Image 1: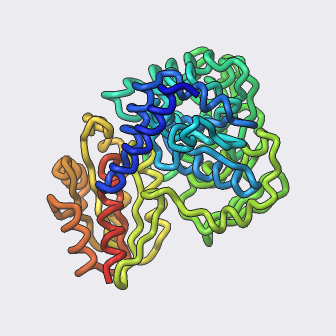
Image 2 (image 1 turned 90 degrees about the horizontal axis):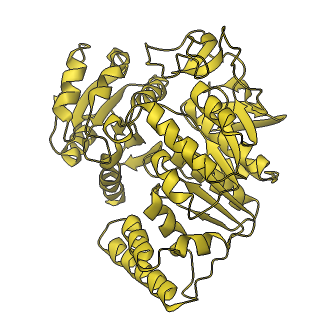
Length: 445
């Protein structure tokens, strides 16, 4: 190892340690510093992975899917490098490897499980060649950053060309993801839910994949699961949902989630239909990596969600659930999950418009907030930089709300006068700070 690599690793580790002491994540800073000192470090470190490098891309569910995948691999005795915190751009990916290396520039890893931002894959793949890509879904997200969804798909298509030997594990129920994987020319394996689950989809969701990407004709659906996810076909050119290799059947959501795949019954104490896709995607990736998940039940039982992904806190006598909701499709699924709880509940919604969130919050008008009008929603509090925009959006569906400038004060007030069942939905830059507030409150005696 050269002096430059040693200096890069040492500087990154020191930066990460200082940031943690200051109460900050510091992952991106550590990766940026390492890449500045040694631009080739990611390629050298990732090249030491002994078996498989698996990346997870897609609009929603990346962090949960990636962390589930890592847990499944570790459950089978694999040593895994993973960017658990969700730092998924080039510098965050670099940090995952650099912070796992010793000062001699060596890593001890059988596999890598790496979440990658869709727009950043073209920057990451020149440094690291994945063996598998999991493509979860493609929804409209942060228009001011990504542009229309076609631009995101173009970036992903370009990235796929940089890794010609990579297999794609794709969500067959999403016509955009399925078309992109099929057009890439890569070997593919599809997962999905081939049977109808809901009699009709909830609300009036915006559907991104309304038209066939092959010929432009409106797609015909036999049924929807949510958004554009479902069983589709083109009446003009024959494009249709690909054959599903990993099919979630016999779905039950009466007490947690349960489904069967490859004759294996999976039951988890999770909420939210979308988590079936997350579990199924991770399972399919493990199987396509040639690994039999013999310890899957134990892994799912012991799995600890990434912070802010259905994370539950107990504060005094109250249960608080924190979840990320950052675009229309994700927010609508969060609403569905909240409303499956028939008990009385209080609700806090925090909306920011920092660069990482997307400064355009017009997407709030595509979310079915009218579903919060049911009687078991005891109160709604809004906060964040764009709290007034959120309050206005609720006013248009006749849902009263209170505005609280401070997220911490909003939480404390609802803990003091609420019903003991609190849901906190936040977009991206509010996630870490809100998590810290809830953690500190939970740790208080």
